[in-house]
Image (tube, rainbow, N blue to C red; front, top):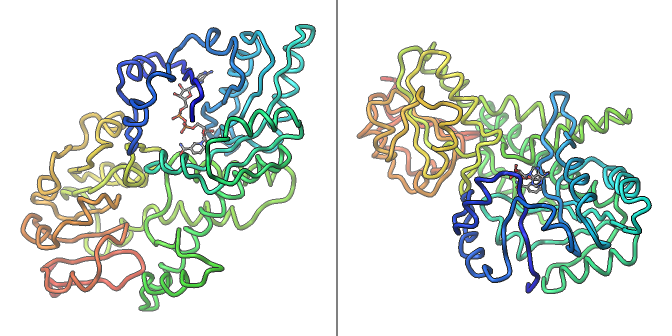
Length: 418
Ligand SMILES: NC(=O)c1ccc[n+]([C@@H]2O[C@H](COP(=O)([O-])OP(=O)(O)OC[C@H]3O[C@@H](n4cnc5c(N)ncnc54)[C@H](O)[C@@H]3O)[C@@H](O)[C@H]2O)c1
């Protein structure tokens, strides 16, 4: 959009790789975008220099969950201190990190105290981020909305200038409302997923097909057809922590949001649904070879935060199974959890080799495009448990496998000879 941007991080290796034009995360279109904008974009760990004359500073540091589910603000508060010590002119602070309602007020107060007597002013604005991993560039450039929370006319004008080149609608509101829009939106989506997963579990019991139910529901524009795909639950860096943070906050104010609490509980159970189904075929998992297709919490990313794969692999290893895993992007990150306990495979076929069971955790295109015959030809016992409903059921009959997915009828082509 023509602005000059300095990316600041305390992680030297990230900054070094960005300065070598290497992207430290996998995100479609990001490398190209970085390359196109090299002339106006630099990266540094020298925050003092970066903040000194900045007109706008975006805070996008982590806000991970604490043990009690509340958001940990230590990174945000550290960044505020670093900014206050560094700036030499007035600036607008845009908080992009997802923060509890009232955090803007708290850090405005912190800035006012730290800058007292300097003649400098930092105006804190809430500017929540709505991008999804896996489509971050597209989501950012064509956002459904840009939310800016401030009561200051000057800060509002500066932010309007920042976003001048974007065609997305800009919604101005007060700072606390903007902070709540982020949690309310994420938690609503998490709730929608949890709801369809509960409907899917009911479909399993009642002989209905959740894909058809979702299609029927999604045709209603009041409901919409997105986030109605049944599966083994949501993961990632946002939905799990943002549901817990709002739940904590609502409890703190003695106004528990019961729907969000329900979403958290449903999702925790749903993540282990495939292993529950697996018990129909194996009383215990000791000595089994299990293929795990997909480790990332969703396709298009190498992020493993709260990915169902982590919990499922932990259970399998604890039970004494051998795990053969395949993922096109997330293997290096998974090795941080399991450096040697898991066999990492270059190809899907290799992961399936001699397996007694296959768990599909991520709907990567390579998995979706796989011919069902590959399972039958490669596995010792072709029991395929699909946590992402990758295949139409029609294509499974006659493929010589046992195929179970979420909220859809099981296909047993082995005639009970499992
Ligand atoms: N990941 C998403 O899809 C997404 C979407 C919307 C909002 N958010 C929110 O954005 C925030 C960041 O999330 P993320 O996934 O990008 O986290 P991340 O952990 O991937 O990246 C945050 C970066 O901040 C750096 N950092 C920490 N302290 C710093 C400091 N004082 N100065 C400079 N850099 C510092 C870290 O080294 C890290 O590289 C969170 O609040 C999250 O909830 C994330």
